[in-house]
Image (cartoon, rainbow, N blue to C red; front, top):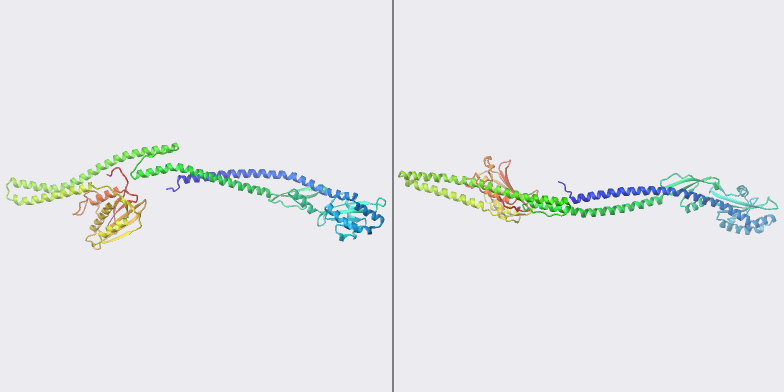
Length: 549
C-alpha cells in the first residue's frame, strides 16, 4: 500500500515540472545571451584594434614631430649651434645641463640628449651625463632620419631625433636624440582601450581573446592585442545568479500554489475516506462534496453505494435474524424433545396400569410422577437459559484496561489445582463493555480449567498482546485432552456441549458478545496437546450497526 498522499504527489509533480521548466528556459536564455554577448564581444574587438593602431601611430609620429619641432624652433638648439660655431660652448654648458632635463619632461621621454656631430653631450636627461663624449650617439642620430624607429635593445624603446646644421659650415650640427620606453607606451595606450599589448606572441587562452596586427608607423612591426573575457564571464555569472533566483522563486511559488490546490483537491477524498471508514464501522452517512465534476460524481456514486449498503444491510440483518432464530428454535426444540420422551412414557404406563386396575399402579405412580417433575424442571431450566440468552443487552462501552481485567479474572480462579500462568505485553486501552468482557473471559477460563481437571500436571496460560489493525488479543490455552472433531464444527452453536453438567450456551453467548463488540473469537489445537481459545477486540470500540443478528 502506497504511503504517498495525493497532496504529496501533486507537490512532487509540480516541483519537478517547475524545476524542469525553469532549468530548460534558464539554460536556453543563458546560452542565447552568451552567444549574443560573445558575438558582440568579437564584433567590438576589431574596431577597438583599429582605434588602438591609430593611437599607437599617433604616439610614434607624435614623438618624431615633437622632437623635430623643438629642433627647429627651440632656442636651446639655436643657442647650442651658435656656441658650437663661435667656440664658446664651455660658458653655456651649465645652462644646457639644466634646461635639457626640463625639455625631457616636456616631451614625456625617458631619455634625451643634446649632442654635437662628434658625440659630445652638451646636456642630457641626467645631469651626470653632461660633458661626456659618445660617438655612437652621433652615429645613431645620423641614422634615424625624420621618423621614430623601434630599437631592439633591451629594454625596447622608440627613438626619434633631429639635427640642426650650421648654414655656413654644414659639417657642424647640433641634434636632439629622444628615447621613450615602448613597454610603458604600450601599457598606457592599451589600458585606455581595455587591452594588453605585447610585441611577443601570446598563446590563446580561454580567459582572453588575442589578435596580432601590424603597425606601419614602426615599419610593419607586429603587435599582440589581448582583451580579457572577465567582464563576459562576470556577466554570465550574474545571469546565472539571476536565473537561479528567478527559478527558486518560481519553484517556491509553484509549490505554494500546488500546496493550496492539493489541499483543496485532497480534502474531498479525505472526507470520502472518513465516511467510508464510518460506513465500515456501521455508521454510514451520505456525503456532500463540492468542486470539480469528477468529485461531485464520486460523491454521488458514494451516496448511491451507501443507500444500497443500507438496504442490503437491512435485508441481510433480517435474513440473519430469521436464520438464527430458526437454528435456535431447532436447538431448543431438540433440547425440549429429549425430556418429553420419559414424561410421555411415564404417563402412558400410568394409564395402562390404571386401565387394568393393576395393583402395581400405586407403587409406580410415585416413580412416574417423580420422573415427570424432574423432566419438567429440566424443560423449565432450558427455557430460562434460552430466555437469558435472548435478552442479552447490547454492549455499553467505556475505556477499559484489558490487562487489569485479565489479571483480576485470573486471580479469582487461581485457588484450584491447576497452575494458571499470565503473560501480558503493553497494550492500548480498549473501548468495551467491562462486564461482558469479564463474562467471556470467565467462561473461557472455566472451560480450560474443566478440560485439565484430573490431569497429571494441569496448566492453563492466559496471554494478552496487541495485534495489527488496532486490535488486542486475549488467549486462553490449556494442556487438556483437546476437542474432538465431531463437536468442533458445532462448538459455538447453542446447546452444543460435551460436559454432562453444561447447557451448551456459554460459548454461544461468548461469541455473540464478541461479535457485537466488532471482534472475533475462535479456537485451535495446540501441537504439544491441548486447546487454545482466543478472542480479539477492536481498540476503537464496537461498531454502530442497525441491529445485531
